[in-house]
View 1 (cartoon, rainbow, N blue to C red):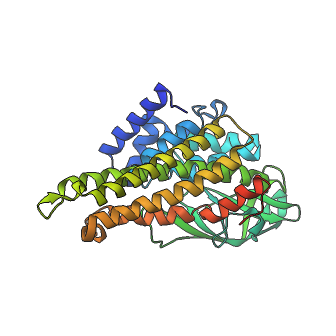
View 2: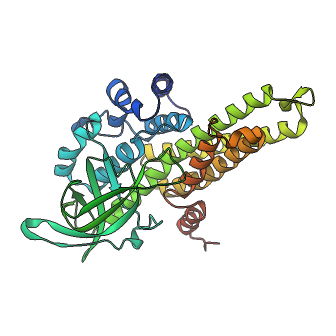
Amino acid sequence: MRLTEEQQELRAAVRSLLARHDGAAAWRPLTEQIGVAALAVPDEYGGAGCGSREVHVVMEELGRELCRVPYLGSAVLTVQALLASGDRAACARLLPPLAEGRTVGALAWAEQSSWDASAIRAAAVPGPGGTWRITGAKHHVLDGAEADVLLVAARTAAGVSLFDVAVDGAGVRREAAVSMDQTRAQARVVLDGAEGRLIGADGQGDRALAHVLDLACTALAAEQVGAAERCLELTVAYARERVQFGRPIGSFQAVKHRLADAYVLVESARSAALGAAFAAADDSPALPRYAAVAKSACSEAFSAVAGEMIQLHGGIAITWEHAAHHYFKRAHGSGQLFGPPAWHRSRLAAGLGLTPA
């Protein structure tokens, strides 16, 4: 599994831009100069018509810098939910501004800490003029407090469905969430009879969300690999510079062993993430299995490597002046995002016809 020359050039362009623009300020140049928000959007809706391999490249680079831009929530979750819905009119209306980066989208999906569609309890009932009225609370909504487009998953008499809800409409309350990982913007969205417009077929939202979950895990795995790789780079550099007992700590055999183990974790995680990205790009029926493997393996690898970063840096790693604690918090936050590793291993076991452990 190798990336093409064009995909490597995309990586170089994103890395170069992120070196010049920090944090949330990088969103406009990323969308205007490189067009990252358009990568997964088909040509007919004003996008670049690329796929999961290009998304993988961008997510890896964003992960390296823990860049706080709304790429995962908008360009992955919202875009893929619209495409999976099969609603061409909604796609034609909402995707072009999302592809340009003029608007930011959010998918209000999880309730409490579950991304399983069967756990959705938010309710939608028919309203006047073909609209729907939605009541419920959504958690862990990526970029939900700042989004311009809000898609909500709610349960109707026919089953789980997707709705387009005006962010400033009556009955909509958005609250920025205070989380351990301050580098990822999340929100709680409370709906009290909020008006929504049906996206796709009534009762088919669970099918769409199942596909979105696989693509979300695939993209997040790439981010985790990029962040884990950066943790290892920073730790190796520190081990060469930090002198103890008259020698760099990187010269001690025990430290070498720990860094070697971390390298194996990063490269193994990279293989899992690339496998999922290629399966998604090829529209493989095995994608759910690849995505579950990637989410589980990359979550645990990132957490382990970030933990080694803390340990081998020592006291400086838990100061506000050093980036190590940010990576550590992102590792644990992303490990729970879209479901913990154990849940995805259960998904994998079910997909393989095995009894979950």
